[in-house]
Image (tube, protein in one colour):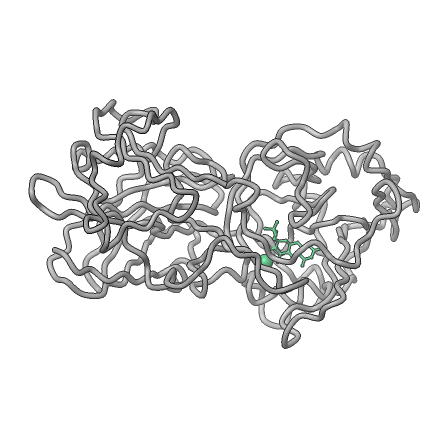
Length: 415
Ligand SMILES: Nc1nc2c(c(=O)[nH]1)N[C@H]1C(S)=C(S)[C@@H](COP(=O)(O)O)O[C@H]1N2
Ligand SMILES: [Mo]
């Protein structure tokens, strides 16, 4: 899979058109130019002029309109992470997304690079067309996916983050894709639901021959929602990802997607819908992910659970070293995601220094996928820095961000 990393000016609405050098680092992998960048004889001129058609990281910051890229730095947490390796087995199956290559024109990650949490179950061998069993407080029935599929519509880009995402692999358990799927309202509309039902459990195949190492992940994949939670979020049963049928590791042939909710609710290989009432205990999946989705301590019943929505968050994903009129300036590029309404109150802080406003350009317009931001930084000392983001608006909940969860460290050697 080829990756391109290109920047050129003026591709973004709301930004001034700029005439800046075009740099192409497409190499089929992770662009790493860091220290050996110049030594390897790779010059800016040598990178340019490859006939680039696709747009890239556009700059809204005057600083970088005519600057020369001198290197790309790794965050400490990205050291040694192989972003192209499918590792472990079964529930422990992982693929981490390399967010450092995401460019500003990119609202999605390709299917081969979209993060994976749990591989296609080796015990899942469908013997015929896919079906979804309906049970509980409803007329028992079986839904054929073939009957539902014609109801699928484009859902646009939707972002997904594993609630267990962390610094162990450069926060690579988050991605975004274009989805197509069947609105959950259409699915529920085909079922005769008992008036006593207040909630619905959506479950998927979850049996693997190889147990999770250390019992880290428990069997059973289902989550219980109120009807309003699913409808308000615009939940859908996804059948396509980036214009292709769902890949096996992403839930082939059908998975749940709930825009704005953590990945643990996005059940893959959906095969069961069960209607329950308010006395229903939380599922094993809900209990497993209770703390990671910030649930109240001791939550035991489904009704004790809050919506597992991602609060507004932000993180730097890439640091470039530029030369601007002989001066070294670092260009920090990052993403912001989660939340329920757009904001432009992003701020960045280095170590315990003052909080500096970040110009989000173009402005955030949707919470369904990430927004790219950038910031020009002129560190004064060569040393290790902690980089932390904040949202300077007390009316926007940012619990996870404010806990320091997405703080990253970078070593600066040139100032
Ligand atoms: N059946 C099933 N669905 C599942 C899981 C699972 O283990 N089994 N993992 C969940 C978790 S924790 C996440 S983060 C997302 C990951 O989706 P992806 O692998 O397509 O990125 O799938 C969810 N759906
Ligand atoms: Mo997850």
